[in-house]
Image (cartoon, rainbow, N blue to C red; front, side, top):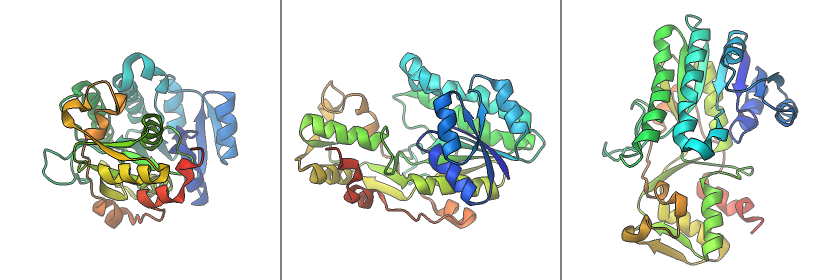
Length: 311
């Protein structure tokens, strides 16, 4: 299959491209700069120059391919409008893909995220619609949900569309900008590893190599209008994550009381995310796509030590 991939030089995409090539697919990666083009080429893919603002170019690339995997984001918008702007910029891209692929039955696989199941009283499943994380950040979450819903709805236009919802921690030896490096840096800065309240809120996690496998399987096997869960650890108490970080750094582990959690202090910009509880199951993904996580889980990967090699 000839596959067009965006975000091929990012943390997720740089694992998706080799995964696809190893499975016999021919990959073309989007690159907006000479540096990105060299990185895409080094991964074994062909290069298509362009960016996410060139909707006509994206439509042409989609038309020329047998399938599309989209994991790129407009990170340049982050300083100006935050995640609201980053998510909002994805919607016209998805609609452009829909225009190009309508009636073809070709696969479009887009990156999504696990939403909170707190109001469900149970872990989120693949059959749940795009779920908000809470009421505190309605703008960002509404936009994020609209994007995922738009992708799913392309099934009605004859696109074999699907969304891969990625756990909030995607770990690997090359993870340098995710939640985990941020928590580790924070602990090093403050001199202790903190957790919110009793630390019983649950975070999901998955190795990025296993994420790449879900994208490939969704491309190859997914029926139209489906969501899949790239989640290995379905719910780890946040306190256990803090304890693992504290143990590796030889730092005390401390509860941050709820009444001071949101004040300027320990967690900073992570104050809201660390309070979230995001349990999610992977049963349907495993049963339907035949996915089986093969990489170390989060706590085992922390024990491997590579997150702390520079500490």
